[in-house]
Amino acid sequence: MADITLLDGGMGQELVTRSGDAPTPLWATQVMIDHPGLVRQVHADYFAAGATLATTNTYAIHHDRLVRARIDHRFAALHAQALAEAAAARAGHGAGRIAGSIGPLVASYRPETHPPHAEAVARYAEIARVLAPSADLILAETVASLAHARAVLEGAAAAGLPVWLAVTVDDEDGSRLRSGEPVAALAPVLAEGGAAAVLANCAAPEAMAAALAVLAGFGLPYGAYANGFRQITKAFLADSPIVAALESRPEMTPEVYAGFAMGWVAAGATIVGGCCETRPAHIAAIAGRLRAAGHRIV
Image (tube, rainbow, N blue to C red; front, side, top):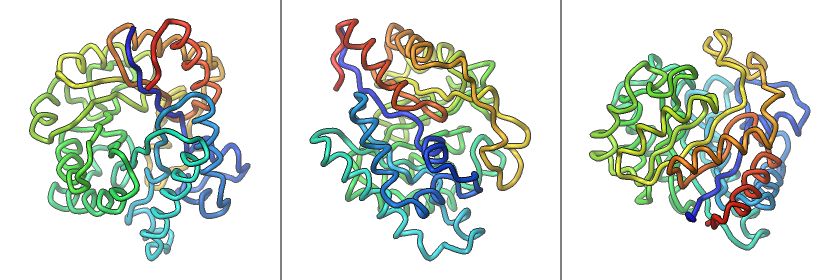
């Protein structure tokens, strides 16, 4: 049996749900501002469910988003708050690692909006340096194109920590990135960028098998964490979207989702978890299935 790293589940959607607040373009960042301590509680609940890694609530803390909301002066303070809440949850649990999350610049799922290479590298490096003192690794999330992958790997190297690259794939063809480029084309990018692990994230669970079949050939630890959206809508691809434009899948119960995760493990994945619209119950279901199958959660 294998040693499996069990990631946490969705943070932004979970925060919006628990707060009861209407979604805004600042998404999880706004909830963290308005409800101090709620991020810590979500982290704590994921640890209690069996996760061994807390992904910081820093995915959407980018200058381009904060400037629009006129709070860019809080860039450093918001990162510090997110890191402190993750650290507090880990201390309360007594174990676990912290992954410093770096989300896409400008917008998720829209590779055409990604800034030019030099600009993107500088922005990612700034965040990596802020995350480095409090994180065990950097998790570059929802990477939608080869250009995005190159830039975030180069920038994240500034942290001096292992960097895990998580790419978002087409919901209907998991062998392709959201940009349409083949996942297979990541091979030289990962090698040149020094990635420590590669994952597929924030796409339909059904798309992950095709993605993993490609990731398995890269010679790195690999895995998947899918979302629970019915589809990425055109409304969500507009400027300054809000998550109200996305529809969840009520049929994606914890047990159903855990079944997908166990399929990924059977395919060789050693890192699994959940993305948007997965909750602590989904992680607990995966943990239970992993233990029952004789795997060790690390």
